[in-house]
Length: 418
Image (cartoon, rainbow, N blue to C red; front, side, top):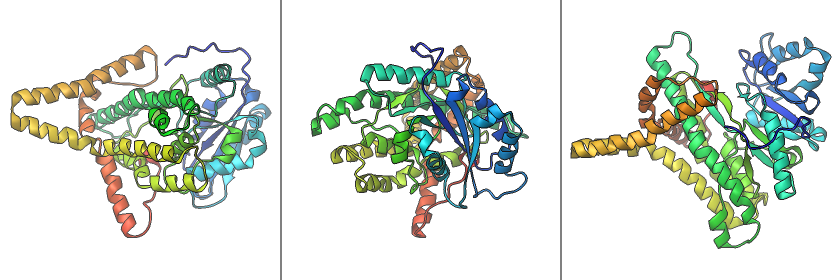
């Protein structure tokens, strides 16, 4: 995915990147080295590793590994890289990020606050492109953008002792998620960022229905003005922060501007972990009422009708996910029962929905030399995941049903090995 912006030799924007880390011993050193090597003026790009006491201290804990690595670096790197340790044994990723932001609030007033995961690998020139996008936005709208969001394509690596079939299925599920990014997520960001400025021109129901667009805001690849983040932090009263945070920013009429470069994120290699991961991602379905009530309670909106309309859009997207598999499987059974012509139509539908877009995505990935491996065989085996895409939401529904009966919430494991 390329940018139409001209990159500047002397970019203006300062960034502070926060990388929350919990049990990241296997990757955290590689992550720090990768980010330190990004193509951007060192004095304008600094990093925070936000560890947590939830991970007990030991000689091999993430905190100790990070501290040892920082101490081994040259002074120039030590000035750019620091650790901020969240002192409590409970809490989620949002607590670590918010604690880090509060710890450096003076520095954030003149910088963009950026969040990436420990497994994130953004393009080397990402921050130059973001700087160019920020300056372009300033010329167009006379103000700096509040939020920019980088989307991710997903890669699956083969784990030890994993069978070929399992590996190819994992690759297929990663491609399915990448397709969603390319066809749904980026389109949603573009629509939301284009329509949001139009909402400010007229404050009436018709204009709300015409231009109010919901978009989630992912906790990795998030670029946000530091001053704005300090007063509108990630929600800590929900398990998943991405969709509720998008609802908050959409309610505040902040355009979530898509960044014209993609990052590469990791998808679980084992299919069982994929379904568990998706069950975690479905948590907002059961907590939107909390996000909605918090927004209303704190008066974090421009129009109450608009907030409800945005929430409805969010629920619709989750309902589509919940019933996705049922539609495909029920229609398959009916087509077989009705005869060959109907089954042929079902196959054509699958080809249009999955196979053609998958081969286009494969070509896009190869053409742009994105470091993701997509085998043709994984596209065919990936059909299994397409037909069972709703299994994750169904697992989440079962977990929440049990938890609610016990007047509690499900636990939230690390999503890559959920």
